[in-house]
Length: 223
Image 1 (cartoon, helix red, strand yellow):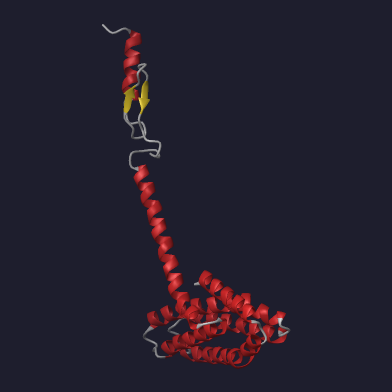
Image 2 (cartoon, helix red, strand yellow; image 1 turned 60 degrees about the vertical axis):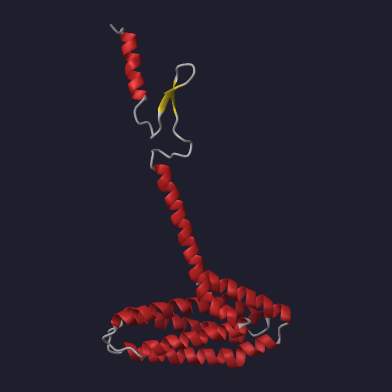
C-alpha cells in the first residue's frame, strides 16, 4: 500500500509530466524532474513556429515595400541629375492628368484610384522640392522665387483636398481637375524654364551632385 508521502510524490510526478509549455518531462541523473522544452519555444509547442513565420512575413513585407519604392523612384533617378529628375516627374504628373480628363462621370472608381496615385506622386514631388531644391534656392540668394513656388504648393494641396471632398461623381469634378492641371502646368513651366536652369548654372558640379543625391534620397523615402 502506498504511503501518503509516496502518493503525493506520485501526484506531483503526474502533474510535472503534463504539458508544461510543450516540452517533455524527464528525470535527471539524480532523480529530479526536468523539462526538455527548447529555449527557443515561446510559451508552447507551436509558438516558436508562429514567431518564425511572423518574422519571415515581416521580412517579405519589408522587401516588397523596398521594391515598390525603388520602382517608383527609378524613373526619376534614371533621368539624370536633379533637374532632369524633377522634369520627368512633371511629365509623369501631367500624364496622370491626361488619364483623369479622359474619364466620365460613370467612372467614379477609376477617378478615385487615379486621384490617389496623383496625390501620392505630388506629395513625393513637393517634398523633394521643399526639403532640398527650395532651400538651395534660398542659399543662392533666390529666396523670392523659392517663397513664391513654395506658396503655390499650398494651392496644389488645396486642389487635392477639394477634389477628394467633393466626390468623383460631382458634376463639376472634371472642371475642377482641368483648373488644377492649368495651375500645375504654370508652376512647372516657371521651374523648368526660369528658376531651375538659373539655379543649376550657378552651382558647381559637386553642389549639383549633392542636390541630385538628396532629391533621390528624399524621393525614395516618400515613394
